[in-house]
Image 1 (tube, helix red, strand yellow):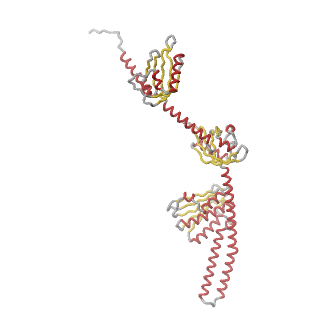
Image 2 (cartoon, rainbow, N blue to C red):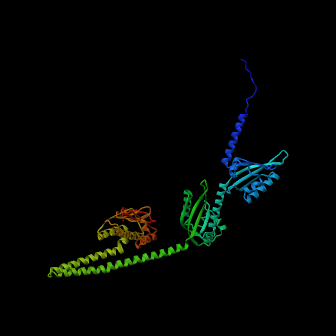
Length: 495
């Protein structure tokens, strides 16, 4: 068997052809994903070639030839065509490349924004023979930029024309911008404010709390609302402000700046102080009047009743020979006088507790609970824990009055006959808690109602920087807490 060896190499053209088509397919896919179409133009023959993706971007039927350069005039808005025509002429004359953002008009009348890039192709002599380039569909990006630009423009108008103070502050507290309302509020120009920090225009006593609020917002993100503080006007006078701010971050989450709204509340603050002073004077006058009436009841009316009881007793003893019915009526009168005297004593005690003044809040509250339970025929469990030493008289009086009001309301409306009262201390504060297991009510409605009792409790607590809270559910009982902060040290197990 003869073997003939040949040195001819296998025909690789089918393999090369297959590789060419594969590369061409990958190029089309890459253009589709990038939304970039390519083109060539031979100016001499006016022959234009488009890639498949450029047909899609322009909205043309890929089975038709692409429009010539001059025909493309209809495919752009007037302004875009003028810029494209000028760039093409420049490229043909000087071989200068170009990059333009153009508004393309599709055959169906819709428009797309494209980024057109072009460059010259030279011959061996250096002359320009062709132009080639790409068109990238940037419609969505352009719309997003336009939306952002419109949003920024609206923000600038709102920022500048707002009737309240508006500021932009860097994360380290430097002013970046301020509108006229804020500048007028503090007497500075915007240029002067950009040389200052939030700390420099904040009252020194208020800066620590405000600094903590800023740090908390930077850490947690988000915003803070209605923070009240004093600012220092350029003239040196104090301006009370209420501010709300949001922290703006980069897409990666880094803090950019605070955008804040600042309202001048000086007049409101002064009016509030005037009202508070008037309320304080009213409460003080009320307490003085309570004390006077209590003294009159105890020292005058009660003494008269005591003398009347003595006279009735003496008459009863001298009337041993009188009919039995007459002596029984005298005994009834004696008992009535005694009951009236006891009631007057209880009223005097409620009006003004001498025990509160001389024995302290624990003794006064214990005595009141015992007397009130006896009078109303209910059970009141009283307890106390960790009561601080040296509680100011005005704080004791405030809690005593709040207890009276809360317990009276509970007895009147709860529908039960058992109640718990606790005095407690801790964390440099003292408070009172009144609880029952009765019908309950809506706490939110109660906190917003305008009843004189609740207003009185709120105002008394406000004057000593205290607070009241109400916890209640239908048929699950009610708990009222009143707590007042103290700047004192030391505790005693009982007072």
